[in-house]
Image (cartoon, rainbow, N blue to C red; front, top):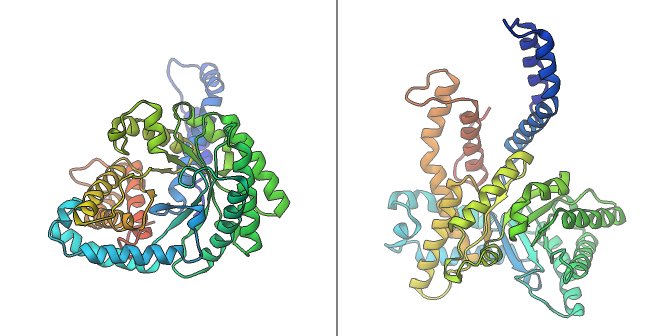
Length: 418
């Protein structure tokens, strides 16, 4: 999809206004006001263009799955799918499952075939080989080995069955203690990925624990050197916001990343700990977490960069009660993220995926008829009872596009997408 010519629309509007007499306001004054606001007008045009780019781009994958780098293999996606299907089949008929997931029984019955289809076809939509907190600190020789192996395995995984849309590493931060180690692992991972014939267009990098725009600028410089060495296009970079300083300056971080900025990811537990929140309250839907995500959403909307939620730390493993308890938490935070306009989040274990998919699919299935009816009525000028406007139209179309992307709905050509 092409971006709307926002600047052209703005200039046409300005020409019409300049041609219209304004009693009591001289042309000289109006010209002076136009000159005074020229920089502001340009900034607003840029913001509108960024929003248009964000609306026009393909919806983000429903999740990013994190796997410690030493555990990534060419069959990781298939293994996750098989494990997720097994745990879903184990509890699909459980009478408490609908209430656990916050769904009616009929909603769950409607969603389950689509959840199973996704798990059979693409259980991992996006994957990060984690060389940071999920991997820990190892000696240099060991991390060198794992970074190379993960790069080669990721290339094979993307070329194999049930493969993700994209994948890449999360490296260590640009803080003094981990900077050189993180950049070395990025270099080793990238070289091994390309040596194994990995597609660089499907490669993405996540940079954690960012506090200052200079860290981003320095990381971009390192990426540019790697790209020049290998002769590849610029790598998209996801900025993981999990420090108080990073949240305060998130708009500056996005500017520092420039056109590489591919996502703003919220780091639930580092951020919560930085604010002194007690461990038992460190959750993705804590008020402090939602405040931080509002800041990310503001910066992302201005720059055309999507936001990704964090994860629950409670894994659905063990006996029935433990799995259902973890799914209850997972379902709650996924639904809350959707309410906040965040359609993507992290999954840290295969058994987390069924709960996420069930909620996402059910939400889009439940809202489909009302969204289609409202969109058609608005376009026909026949809206009744709801005062819709162009911004609402964009939101309605976005809902449909996300539903299609996650497999919740099908398009037989009748959906009003354009």
